[in-house]
Image (cartoon, rainbow, N blue to C red; front, side, top):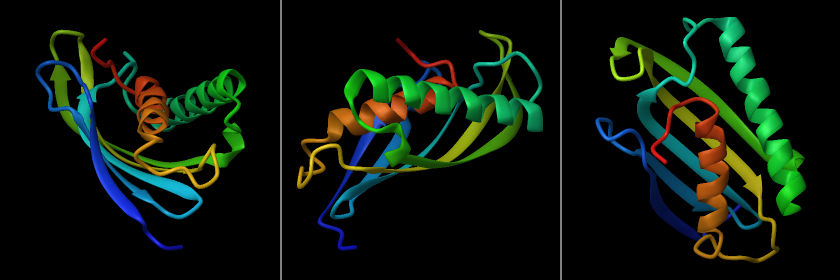
Length: 138
């Protein structure tokens, strides 16, 4: 695959946290998005393997719903998620703070589209995934 274009976006987080940084690459017929940041976990339970499984299930269900609404085949969207515990509490929401390293790779919904023209899709897919993990600013 040949990288034809690179770029950066931000997804707004809670006011006291930095936004999630998105770096994306155009890989000919796919887009790769690398996400990093820290936020308030959208769950009151302590982080463990069961919660991680629930998060992945919720993400997959949300991507399936996204696919039904947009026509972008959810099976063409893959991700790798690593959550990093911080042992800090978000006192406003009384939940733990978690760091994230996330890579999303999805097949372009429109063949030969530039990554610039797909920035709304990049933002939307990333927001869907992050929204299943974190409390995001509306």
